[in-house]
Image (cartoon, rainbow, N blue to C red; front, side, top):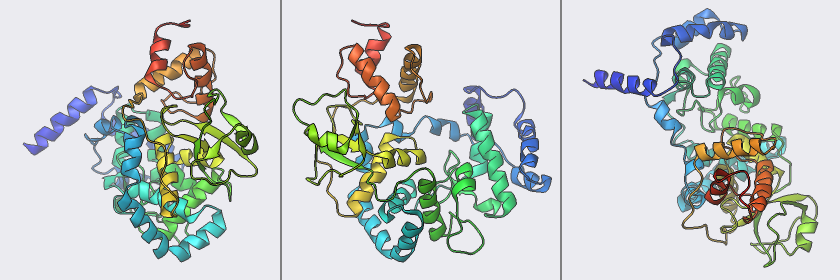
Length: 393
């Protein structure tokens, strides 16, 4: 009965998706040439796919991504809990020697590296137990970003070919993110390092490898040594919300100051950022915040990593309250918003619902057109205006 129920669940799952016409086994075979081109032998390919079947749980999980669906204040309360702050401080102390060496080599602060580890897998306690190959091929087969996940599947086969991890140990999340710091196979291939010197890049069992790989990832994606990620700020009463980018010196001239009473940096630039709109906290973010988003392209995720790092180092909690009644735009509505921006002539850099700083500047201009407060936050008021026509004036 259990086996029958699983089969029925899988059939229902696949029936609801734009699945390829060919049987699953035949689809696997279509990827063999790509694997061969990456140096994967037929023997490794055959061992990797032996007994492989689609995972009926995976499609449902694509629709439950809290960093994109929960109010950001609620997400932060969970991600930056008191217990996680305490655990993070202990981990900083336990791994201090390794972290110091990592920071010297890659320029990424120890607390940032540990915060990524904490948010991704709760400091290694929850790295994911799913078969990475099964997750990746399921996503490709059901039509969820097929090209991307098919490439990741083939890349994962290449990792097995090189011998960094045994097939049975390649475990991770439903989306194929692997190990203690949740690298996709392509990120592992580009950025994983053998920091402990044992001849293998092992982000599953070697903490030095996992933490150093994360630091290398951030460094290679543009982390600037010595630059803060940003900070919460307090706005003057007459603040012009249409302004988004300035040097810190110019922000100071406009009456912006840090909520923690610290001084603004003497040099550099900050981007005004309202993750929950003007009703919530305001931040000046730097390039390093954008680098955190390359790890997971979510404002909630990047802010949780940044804030956890700050709290582990004894810095204060955010001062302003998060809106209690916030209703974030779901991903489908944000994708719809991006299509509206394209129709209005904007060069949108993402069509999957992820909102960059450049896109927030576009949103500011559209909000101003519809006489909404131009805080750059994608919200229901803007969607209502856009759905009402090209110009609501």
